[in-house]
Amino acid sequence: MRREVRGRGGKTVTALHAEDLRREDYARNLLRELKHTLGCGGSTDPSAGALFLQGDRTETLPPLLEARGFRVVRTGG
Image (tube, rainbow, N blue to C red):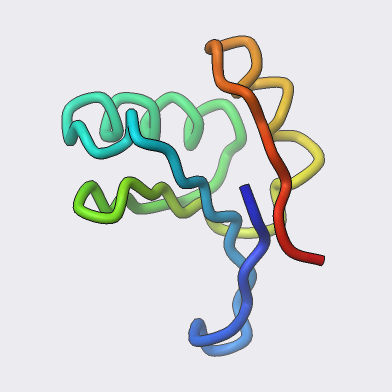
């Protein structure tokens, strides 16, 4: 999990990368649940195994992911 700004017109997104997210149906369902819970927008890129949530969600997202069985590793600054 990391916070990204570069290449997005100054907008902040929280990026998640995992092998499980390469399955399009799984990624789409997880994204739908996270967007609803966090009240934000987002998108998925199954070919890269990534989810992108709008805004800085680095504080609120780890407990939600750990409850779903993910091991959260923060990268970047």
